[in-house]
Image (spheres, one colour):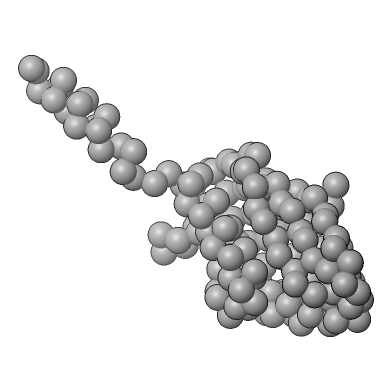
Length: 149
């Protein structure tokens, strides 16, 4: 076997062991969502840039600037309590679109939001769109938007 064939064979067998940026982006999003579902806002917030941008269907609909995630979490909590919502869970589906250009990423994820409103089960299908930023080898959320469909 030539040196080229050996090198090619080694690359072929070891390449899948390295996670791609696309896979890492989806993993970061799912990690954040898992933390949200456990109501671990500290862990979910840690996966966002400090100045992330959030657009969601609850008032005031857009959050920007320092401490974005914490302010969104406070408003979300107030909103669900005011509407009698309980047991919120977001189930992420297939990543529909993931792009990476250097240290920037973009992903569109299908999502299902389930909860109870005054005891009645509610299901909301949505697209969850993310802008990502890689820093120090880790992907963080620079922005996200929730779009019911």
